Image 1: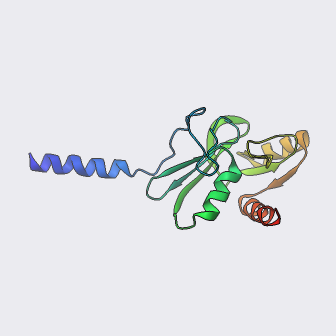
Image 2 (image 1 turned 120 degrees about the vertical axis):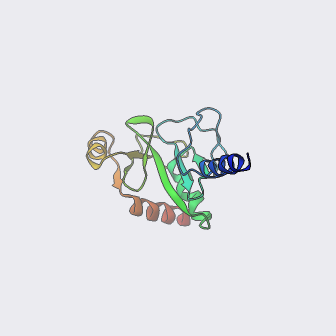
Image 3 (image 1 turned 180 degrees about the vertical axis):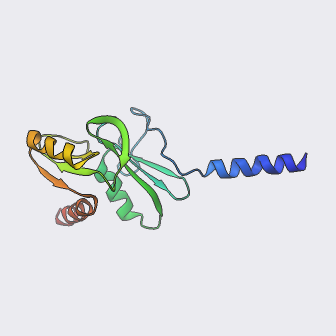
Length: 148
């Protein structure tokens, strides 16, 4: 009996810290950074820490700003919604980003993510704007925040 309880406890311990994204409950979950209700399926994002803790955001810039202010957390995954596939989370580090005034986002950065550079380029021809990769985007947002 004791060994069964011990095994059960170990299973609970390891499954409780599973590193995976959590479902975003649109219309009821709040952004970890700005506390707005997450409703936009094209611009939401999520951080999952190495300990399995999930933080949800209503906009990509909220996720980046949050992590800039909370550098003590070790991130396992940065995830963003794919603009062309609303509600589908993709790897933020491999996504291509478009900042376009023709695509409003929840926090006003006009920032959208795309699963491939080709799709982002095609969207750029339709919506104009500027394309960014992950590191360049983080630097751009950091500089924008300093100038405001």
